[in-house]
Image (cartoon, rainbow, N blue to C red; front, side, top):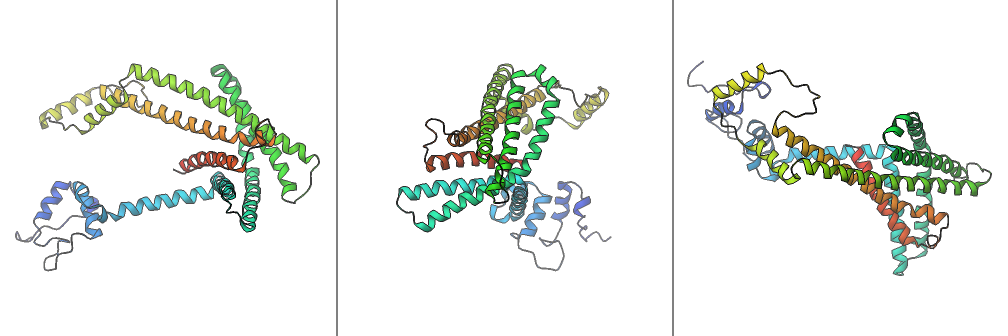
Length: 362
């Protein structure tokens, strides 16, 4: 090869490190695609920006956000895929319909208070409430099969659970049996409501469904409170043993960003020593260095805090839901609640359920 001819650009899949690629590119007489005799390409094109981001990761931070269109497209595609998964799942579709149902109920009550209601809007609100309610009851008929299976598995593993956590197991068992009984009674009550067939003692079946729902919600709320208290105690123990969250985060970041100043000879000696040491088992719970101790403490504390937050949200949603069986069973003070209160409580519980269903699509 002629010495004056610049070397060819290697293929990106088998390219050497970024420094060598940069040295090769410095020899190009023309910027852009590296072809002699052609006009230089504009530097602000998305293609050149994407190539530059692959070759030189440092250039991504200096590139204006308007030029980085590819990551936005990937993020948009992931969001669309998660939305499709949400719509395809029965639970996600139920939460979407429930949100629309109780939002329309709340909006209809607000319009009624402000004298904005017309016969057309009243009919539309009543139709949404009835038709969406029937649709959700139909979806719950199929979801009940999974609940029955979970309850049966919970009963099978009762001996071990009772020895480990008696209170938690009893509350979880009551919750599972309550939702199972509610699903069966609600499915039977759907048949006459949809005009399919009549059943004897329809009023008793509907009342029984609300009783099962009430017991399940009470057990879920008590079980959630017990879990939150236990998680709080575990967090206090971890924080008393390990450094605080802020200190752990600072130490972990400093260890990750601090540049190593060892020479090549020192690196070789360190690698030789590491090769001579016996390997650490992959499932060993004991970290070997202070950095791994801090990282383990940080991950455990973050996981416990996330669990406590999610369980607390479920308790809030179930507390909002408990208004509906109490009102249906005509408990004192709950039978006279307005549509605005019922719609607001339904919006809160629907938001909690929607968040849980959305996180399940990740």
